Amino acid sequence: MAEPLTRVDSAVQGLPESPTEKLDITKPLTRVDSAVQGLSESPPKAKASHRRASSSITGLLGIKEAWESRTKLQVAPETQKTGWKINTSPSTVEDKEILQKSLVTPIVKSIDLVTRSGLVMTARNKFKKENGVTIKDALDAIHKINKKRADDELDEPYLAGFEWVPEHTEYDEEKEKDEMEKDWQRLVIHLSATPGVSNFGGKKKKKAAAE
Image (cartoon, rainbow, N blue to C red; front, side, top):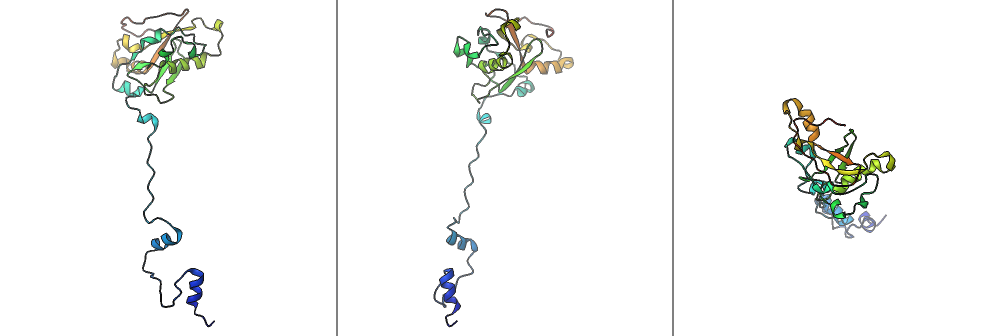
């Protein structure tokens, strides 16, 4: 007990060995923690935030935005030249370059496709491509619901093309706004009994009744 406690404390806790040396308790604890634990006195840098891939692609239009701004769509004419059978893989299309073309312009993130019997499917820009929904995306959506169907189940097994109905239809927006809104945000799928090229057009006073 002859030795002063300060020397014991010095040996155990790393305090100054001389009893005349005193700790400066006025220093902020952050500096003590920094010395003991090796912590940095400066705050850690925040990680840079990353924008989602879909929002970083400029020029892609939401189909709802197209309706709200009354932006007209134009279907790629190449969709009428695929010669594609809807229960086969899109990879069977002979001209592979067609598949990577944008389905419509302006390019969109997604769009509904509807058969003339009323069956609806959605084509999406699945891989965040800068050219938006492609012809292949549309064919993939159609193929998904037809791939298990046998040839004898299909009266019209070939894709003839797509139609954006408002291009050929005059609406009374006051009376037919709901119908116009629905048509604005989708494409009608046209099928054929034989592969070939089809054309759609002819101004109509009213939208043709769905089959």
